[in-house]
Image (tube, rainbow, N blue to C red; front, side, top):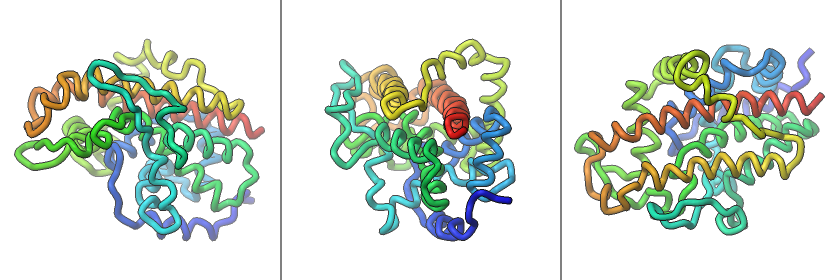
Length: 294
């Protein structure tokens, strides 16, 4: 017998159909989710498949971008600030995240990841709210790995005009979609699966094998403070790439320039790493949530 009431699924499916701007792009979030799906335990897979009402292999990827649609609904408008943390630092000379300084009263991705994790750990909310919490956690684990979601400068790069393959865009969009798609070869679900399989190979037996244990070192959902500490560490890691890669030469080095050449070549290894890292972390995070419910 299912532990979760089915009617709530229709409510969330309707919201999922709405359009919205996608952090990492939908394909990037789906790739994070497919990586996570590979590494979760059997107990975790069973719990989230039941909760989300999807027993297919796409049960995480299928909801990975739901939060980006939900934020543009009347019910979900409050969640818009939850997708980022505005690090008020000074790239490229100084990067860093200060939670008290950078997480405003409306919230941020660090606090949101902690809050929705706590809801899942407690397990006492309604089915609808547990579904929302799961979808938020899956999504925010991806958002927090995008360097410009952990940066305040020029609205996280949204106000830095650039071009890509001759098309006008902005720096944030280049990191959300153009660079990820230059790696995966497209924006479809099949592109996400293929990219995830490549990253899984690197994690399991390739160049990331020796790093993976370190990615989840200290990961804990045992308390709100432990959850916050882990999420803040992830945000700080992402933010560091703003200085080392995203804006290593300052705004003037990218503004009004086409970034589809050497800039993309330099950025691709960082994007690969961040997607792989957050997918693996999401798996262990979901495992920890399910273990804590017992």
